[in-house]
Image 1 (cartoon, rainbow, N blue to C red):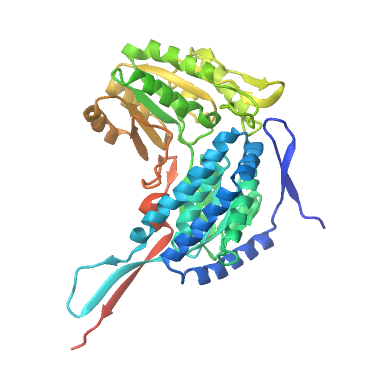
Image 2 (image 1 turned 30 degrees about the vertical axis):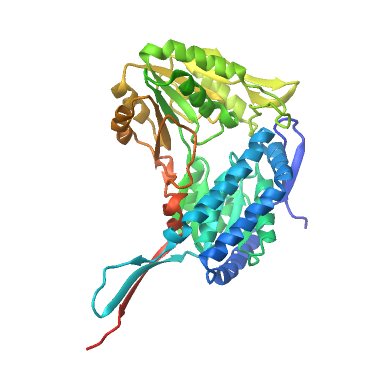
Length: 465
């Protein structure tokens, strides 16, 4: 009986560019068994040895960056230059996490107590199941992988069916790094088989990145069988508030880049913009100019900065959002429909919708495409109310030259990360987390390293009598 397989199409050409086998439940269980054995060997290594191994993983990617970036581009439509940039950023992220690993994983010393020694150690959880999304395939994967490996764990990586090539690249990098066999095992699995993975008795932690719906499925699957920690990194409908005193050109460029980079397929991309009334009309005009200057085209061609939509259903979904907004009174200043380049590609024209309100799905529900909804606000209180009027809370940004004003506002915004004069960015040394339906748990930073450990208390009576 032949092994079932699945294929990946190029979002630009429509050609099949990658195939991968679907693992059976038995194969997934065998992967966990190999990972458990690798963990037993790995947990005895020093943190410096783990850092050195992770550096060898990075060096493998550096040596293969051209080929690996091209595979990514052909699988999910990312412009080639941006794909190379993601791989470089992934390597930097791994190195930054390595730089704080020793401090993050050090035992917690307690005040001296005569006749006793006491401390709290951080022990690895064992096997970490990583379920990674396609939109930033290497950055999303490295967050839990680097933390898990640095903390002494082994990993079973299951990637999105859009980017199995990136999982296989990660597997090749670990194989080349000279680590114990099974330290990072790749499986390609359907949803029922993935449920068996996260329910396996030897899996000690689950990291999932994806939709809110998918997060609920994973959380429920784990809870049916296990009492283990789960990190869920889910969707966003991230707002930006542009105050009248903002550096105008800087704000336009960075807010709109945050909306359209990666064709808007970013959990922390800017999807709704609230602009203070005195600069509203000017901002809307500048937003259109930015959108119309983007170059749609073959993502493998130099100069293209807006690639096709990765998923086949995305253009139709976005068009429905736009048409509903138009019917409810929004003005669509540019874009608003699927488009092509030389007859190829499932593109969606970069879209600026203005005069939107929260009765419209475009201002309330995640778009995950090159679409931005802009609204006029009278000031901070109205902006704050609208920013917080969402079931999601991943990031939010404020744009002003008045730092004191921003610092008064930022603590009141309901989001895992709040920015001043920045958006759509992850600092590896800051905790990456969401509130509301944007997820639970944490990755990156020292907290992300600690998340894939469990505390163990040592209470030693060293003197008797």
